[in-house]
Amino acid sequence: MKKFIYTISILSLIFTTSCIKDFEDINTNPNSPSSVQPSLLLRQVIYDFGENMSYEGFVAGDLLAQHRTALDFNLFDRHALKSPQLGGNPWPIFYTNLRDNEIILNQARTIETFAVYEGPALILKAYMAAGLTDLFGDVPYFEAFNGIEGSVTPNYDLQEDIYLNENGILDNLDKGIAAIEAYSDAIPLEGDILFYGDLDAWIKFANALKIKHLLRISDKIDVSSAMQTLFDEGNYITSNSENAIFNFTNTDPNSFRLAQLRIGDFNNFVLSETMEDILINLNDTRISSLFRPFSNSTTNEFNGLLNGIDASSTSIALADYSLASTAFREDTSTLDANFITAWEVQFALAEAAGKNIISADAQTLYNNGVTLAFEYWNTELPADYLTGPAAYNAFGSNPIEQILTQKWIANVINGYEGWIEYRRTGFPELRTISASLNNDLIPVRMPYPAEEEALNFENYSVAASATDNNSINVPVWWNE
Image 1: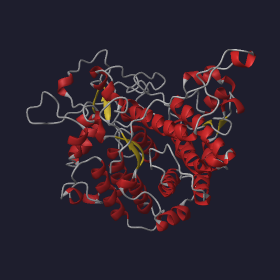
Image 2 (image 1 turned 120 degrees about the horizontal axis):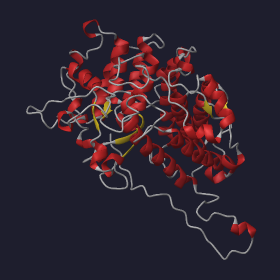
Image 3 (image 1 turned 90 degrees about the horizontal axis):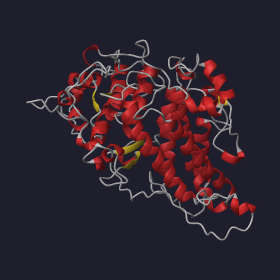
Image 4 (image 1 turned 180 degrees about the vertical axis):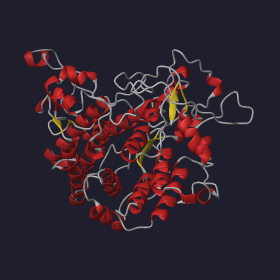
């Protein structure tokens, strides 16, 4: 499943400079280029977004999803989401990369030799916009991303419009596919660290995203026909060799960020009691791939901690709880920055089949998803796993809950996704945290960051009013 990735360097651009002669020279920032090759910018957008969101997924998303819990600096784990500490502020990651991606898109549409970039840029825009609105709800979108040519105080758009309107998520996926299919020139796509210039792979990526996001809004609109067509055509990611990922290395600067930080930062995150119980009850051997036995164990046991402790009044011995496995620090070459994978698609289709959104065998799709997820996490699938507690519809289990639970397990490090799917479905059942700062409620959206109130006050005020003063307990459109 692994793809080799060349060392990613910090994007650097070389300028020709001369003596300052006039006002234009004086007012030009030599460190801010007016143009950049789309190949360099595409590489930068993919890497920067994937690297940052992998870190965010570990230190913040995994807390919301209850994959892990934090021992200290844990206001976020206690659901004070307006107080990000070690992570928990993905807003600038989305907007920085959506802005840079828009530069690629504009170049592709105005410079003939860059036309090959239009389809991938549209697909990336849809991917990042979906992640943004799924976390926050209504956000600046149609007037955003264009920098000098756009508004610096853009309106907030309704999530429904971002999903369904022209130039929105689903429309851009269709347009991205159409642009790739219409491209007939011989100039290759460069800077592509997801698929190495394979345009057919970008189409499979787009179709996988369509399956994911049609399902996400399936409680609001009828998506049956569109999803059945996608399933019947089969032109989506189906194997781990086709995953939209790039892999980290074991050396700086391209190792997983937790491997580069001090050991104290890494040791702040331990196995959640929620995750422990689910894996143990399923006899799931991935617990050894994802976590370490706790240091004080004499029999290689694992021990999790209930999320959201009050660190000021609770004394915790690190040696009593399980840290993340070596894959997250000592050997990060086994980790990926994960955009979407074959197992995620199989679980989405299994859910659609289980809910009669499509006509297909849900059990087969579920089994495929489980098998692919074990392979993805470099864990041998036990011979009896799919006939034991994890068997589809085993012992009167709720098949939809089983599907979502398996997806949730595999989404470790992509923890925001686990939390989003919990919000959408209620599965798997998460626990009331130890010392909640949100009245024992599990949040159902991310709050707009404080800088929005300062920099875009008028439009922020409208959005804050629509969410009960920027409350984390007001559901987004597809979850209403």
